[in-house]
Image (cartoon, rainbow, N blue to C red; front, side, top):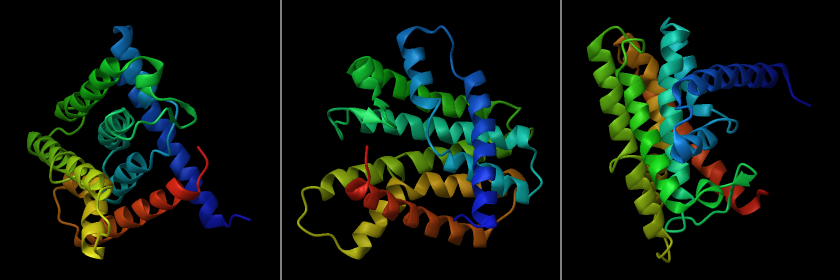
Length: 231
C-alpha cells in the first residue's frame, strides 16, 4: 500500500508530465509531413517525464517560474525522445516496440526515424534560445552549452558508445560501469537537476552530488528491468 509520501510524489510527477505534455504539443510541428508526425509520435503520449519533473522541481527551489522551467523540461524531453528513436534503430538496439507501441522506424521507416531524431535534437536547442525560456541571454547560453555537453561525446552519446563496446567485453570494472552509466543516463538527469541553479545563476554542490547518485540509481534500475521487465 502506498504511503502519503509516495502518493504526493506520483501526484507531482503526473502534474509535471501534464504540463510538459501540453508545452510539447504546442512546440512540436503540426502538419509537417511524415517527419513531423514521427516527431510528435515519438515525444507525446508516453514516458514517466522524470527528467522534466526534475528540471521543474529544482527550478521551484530557486523561485523560477513554471513558464520558464517547463521550457527547459520540454527541451530535455526532446533530447531524450531523440535518443530513444535512434537507439531503437536496427543499427543500434534494433527494437520493434517502445512503451507498448511500434518504434518509429517500424511505424514509418529508418530514414524517417533518423530525420525525426535529428529534428528533435535541434528543436531542443531552439526552445532554449527563446527569450521565453529566460530573459537573461547568459542563462540561455549556459542552458544550451550544458545540454549540448550532456548530450554529446562527453555525455549521452559517449555513454551509448561505451555501452555498445561493453557488449563485446567479457568483463567490466566497477569504474568502467560507473563511467558508462554516468554518461549514458546520468548526464541528462544531471542537467535536469541542475537546470534550477542555472536559471538562478548559483552553484548548488548538494544538487550536483544528488544528481550524480540519482543518475546511477536510475540506470541500475533500468538495467534490472531490461532483464526482468515485460515489454
